[in-house]
Every structure is written in structure tokens, then in C-alpha cells.
Length: 547
Image 1 (cartoon, rainbow, N blue to C red):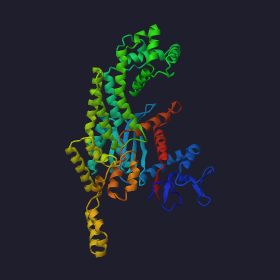
Image 2: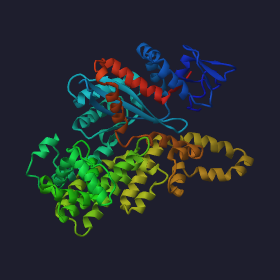
Image 3: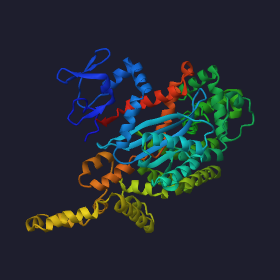
Image 4: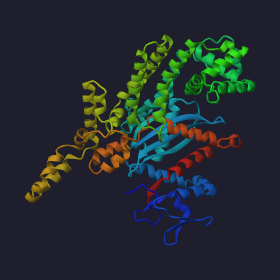
């Protein structure tokens, strides 16, 4: 059955989008007419986006009434328990610009049409501290209210200690309800946050101390480390319109592009990379203005310092490249985590082996590696293994190609086989019944001899025995096209390939919260904020449920 919202009111499949409560089909069901203003839209295949946009733009008050009356809430509560497969979550605490603490929760799954779905299911006000116990209580209350805790497969969070406490409490709750969930196996630590922590450790080693304001930096005469020294030079130029004009002329004289210098900020480590990269690009102009301006001479960089900046840039680029990779697309899912971890660590090892790398930069690389290793151990959890193998570009071949120890490859194979046999494989009695039916008829037995032979080989064996599919491939589309060949293994893929590798989805919701609670709207109540945040996500996702 399709998950498309186009099969709407009047459709034979009785699929229903919430937007149809505001529209009526007219002109032999070829157009949709707004129940409030009479505007009509031509039905275009299975798309209701234009109807949603009309409601949001012209009749937002109707949507708010719908939220207040609980109609959309009921709609979501009906959809999620009936979603195919299991559900994954991202969650985090956030404090609004008006100082109201919230817990945001997103849920993720793969539809029957093999589309990756995500919605914000709650944005609830927190009472008391952001402790793991409080977060756990709010999360379980939300899941119980939606009747979806039994469908949980994973939770993705950042690496704050309160999330460890939350997951231990959740493990106990799930155990009491006979739900399979452990803090070790089912807690996914945000990969983007881990990369950020590793990069920050490298910068701390390099003594890249950030300041809260430019005046503090400008008044500090004792800047000796190379990155703070570069930052002071950049800030001095940036803070003066006259110097900016002189710098522009220096760029022109050196036949360099007339670009703005970048000043890094402590909340974004990659801004330090950007500052170094831009400064290296415009080095000649920076050297010339530092020589020409007496007040800048204390910030002048010598050749050895420029070489050091090149090394730092090369190290930081490893983390930047990985960050850009996982930022590509909607959000990264967990099958990519082990390969990304391994790529970063391999690159750091290669960097460390290079000749003429300064000792302080080597130390920075070493400290970053230690941070990565601290979190890499968690990828031993079975979820990472299963997800990697179910990526048809990787399978077990990834481990073999990257020279993993044979005992680990054997364990990975055993883990997925054990899970498949216990949870996803067809029931033995059904297989026996089918084969007995064929055996009783000699004609059918003759025709289906090959079928019986292939049945002895499980879907998992067939999948693992087939070659990987290299290059760019739409993973979910492949499973959609091959679901008929691997119906039971596809059910496993539907569960595991929706698990987020990062907490990016909930962080995006927080960005939306900042936009919502502007200076003009700072008096919005917590319940109004919750309703606005959730309804925006629900309408954007265009949920449907079966009538």
C-alpha cells in the first residue's frame, strides 16, 4: 500500500491526508476546493504540497485551532503506532531565547514505499534540572502517550553525561516492559558531535584560545601562539575601515582576489579552519600590510609560522571533510558511521607519518585520535554491525577490504545471522507446509525442484553471497526494488537503515525554535511554542493514515 498522500479522499485505497479535512474534491474529483475561501487547485498525481502551502499561508489560524482541539495530535497518534517497522529517535534539551527549557524529540522510520520519514513528535517544557532522570521521564511519557515505546530500536543523542543517565534509565524501563533495548547496544552517540570534540581537542592542544570580544584580544600584547597571533592580525584589520581599505589595495597590488578576511568564533571550530585558509590565500597582502603598518608589526608572521598554519589547516581539513560528508543530504544514517570513523583515523595516522610535521601539531593530532578512540569503542554495538552489512555497497566486503581481523568478520556474520534467524526469518512450520504441499504432487515437485533447492539457502545467505553494488546508489530504492526477492531481510533493513548517525534532526528543530521565538514573540507560552513547533513538522512531513 502506498504511503503517498495523493491517494486521498475518494481514493480506493482509502489513504487520507490531514489536509483533506480543509478541502473538498470538485469537478469529477479533478480539483480540490478550499472549504474556507473557495480557491481551487488541480489535482497533480499524488502531490498535496500546494494544498498544505495554501493552508499555511492563507488559513494558519485554522491549523492552530486544529492543534488546540487536538485533531492533529490524534492524527499523529494514529499514524505512528501503525508505521511499518521499528522507530528511531533523536532527542536533546534546549533552552529558548525566553529561557524556557524544552525537550525536543524526533522520530524516524522508513515508509512502505521506502521513503525516509521524520517528524518532531514533542517539544515539551522541562521542569527542574536537565538531569538524565528528568529527560527520561519526559521521553517515556511522550512515547507512552503516542503508544510507540514498544517500537523503539535506537536513540541518538549528543555525548553529554545526562544522556548516559537517561539511557540507563530507559534500559530499565524497557526491561520492565519486555522491550529489547540496552544502553550499550541501542544508544547511538552523535557522530558530528564526536568529530567536533576531536577537532576541539586538537585546537586546545594548539593553544587556540578564543576570546569573548575583540577588544580583549586587541588589548592583549602577549600573543605568541601562531593561531591567536593570526587572529589578532585579522581582527586589527577587520576592526578598522581604514585598514580594510588598505588591505583591499594590497590585494589588488599583489593580484589577489579582493576577499574579506575571516574571523573565527569559539562556537564553531571550522571557522578557525576558514580563517587560516583565507589568510593563507591572501598571505602576501597580509605580510605587506603588517610591514607597512607600524601597529601591526607585532602581529607579523614569519615563514616558519606560515608553514605551521599550513600544517594546522591540513589537520583540520580531515575533520572538515568528514563533517561536510555527513552534512550532505537530509541526515546521515548509521550505516556510514564505521567507515567515516575509520577514514578519519586512517587520515590522522597518515598525517602523523609525514615528514617535517611540527611536534605541537603531531601532539594535536594524537589528542584528537585519542578522543576518537574513546567513542569508537561504542561502534562494537550490534546496531552498527547490522546497519553496515545491510548497506549493499559495504556488506561484509567492507571489513575484508579494510583488513579487519578474521575473528571480527566472523563475529559480524554470526551476529547478523543470529538476529535474522531469531527475529526476521520465515517461520519453519510455514516452510515445511509449503514444501509438503509441493512434495504431495509429483508434477509440482518436478516444476519446483529448483525452487526447493534455493529455499534451503536463506535470504541472508543469498544477499551476502551476491556481489556488492559499488558507487553511488540510492540505498532505499535498491531495497524497494529488491523487496520481493528478500522480503524478510528487507524488513530488517527497514528497521536498521533509518537510524540517525547524528542528532542533526533535533538540532534543526532548535534552529526553527530560535526563528519562532523572535524578539516580538518572546512572550509566547511554552504550550504555544510546543504546538507551533510540532504542527510545522507534521504538516511538512504530510503524514497520512488509513481511514
